[in-house]
Length: 123
Image (cartoon, rainbow, N blue to C red; front, side):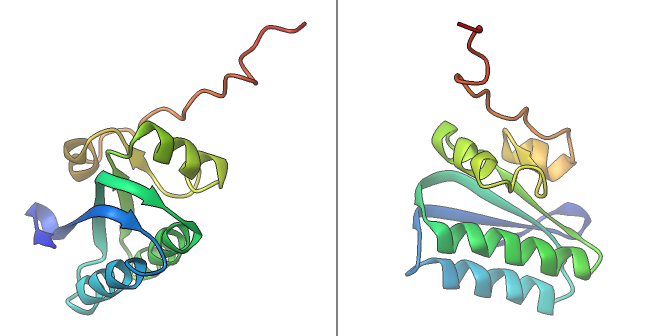
């Protein structure tokens, strides 16, 4: 966890975000909130797996950050993880940015992944 400019906290996640590791992420974010830091960016660039517990941690942490007057932003997910976030509906609630830099500066979120089935021409 790194304190950045303007009171933003950057949390980098690596490897699997699952039932074993998600509690550590939740505790890191609780620690930031306990220190009065309610603006959190999570760097997902090195995440290679995320299960429902990890996804739930994002939703829970987003709600806590907003309740404390801040935000949760997700940054640099792999194409698969970006698609998963969109499929489960988190992209509409939690901003997902293409890069950590964009998330830290508040640049517009990355466009939602395109669904090849929805985009297919009618048969």
